[in-house]
Length: 141
Image (cartoon, rainbow, N blue to C red; front, side, top):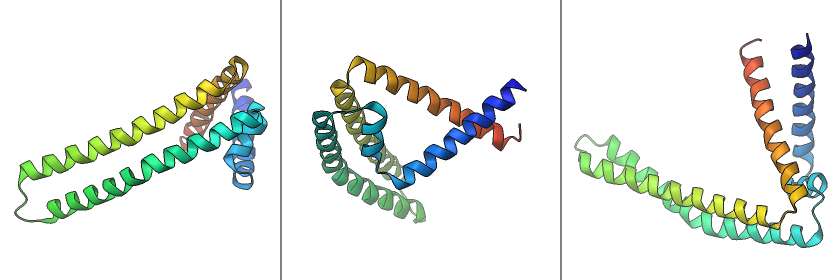
């Protein structure tokens, strides 16, 4: 019974957060929840723009590489070495995008106070709990 109440509570929280997130821009939500100051908000904006500028050309290259791989795979005479090279190119670009995301995340964390970082860890814990709630619902439990 206790687990069921917790599941219902987490589900309600998830639905409220999802509805709220659709109405309010994510930076504004972070400002409110983490109590970010003006300097932190400015830095967040700079980090987001920097990440966008770094990832955009990589995303374009990734799309081209995926199209090239698709063309190779659609060919009757595809050279396995070319397919392998195309896959390695794609994975390399994906890693670069992941690296840019990690760099942005680390830079954002560096702007937070200890209390804000602790609160962010709690939010990540809730994220895992919400994923578990979704899994329970998917399984009908």
